[in-house]
Length: 162
Image (cartoon, rainbow, N blue to C red; front, side, top):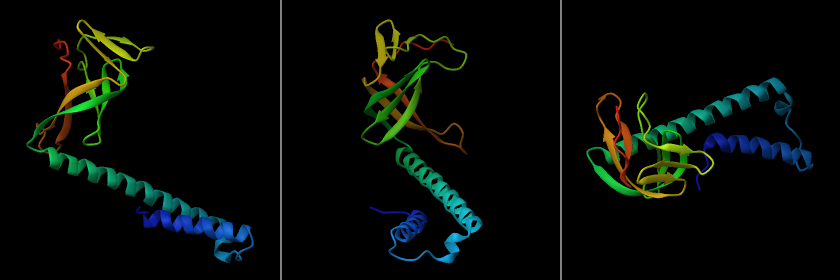
């Protein structure tokens, strides 16, 4: 288990405070400067947030590199149903993505049942926890911004209207 050095320092600060509270060791004078501690914790929190963003961006980049030039069909599970699509999880790759059943301004071929968390159309329904098959590929239409795209291949969805 790897812990970020940014988090380790804040953990060390907390441990020093706890040690002082239980009388294990005296509190150093620099910890008593409220303004300095506020500045330090604000800096630590900012750096932690930036490290999280960098980690997510790195995963996103490597996912695009892995799928570049490939078209993969894989099992997925619906984890959320919206009025215009579903959120799916592809366990094999740890990918979560939104799949829209209609575009902006298009007529939605599905009826949304919020209480049942289901989209229904003639011959097809999508509900939370349903297993589906999805196609995964990288859309390179915008060369400067490739995008991972997922689409449902099973069950067959109604044709999209323009």
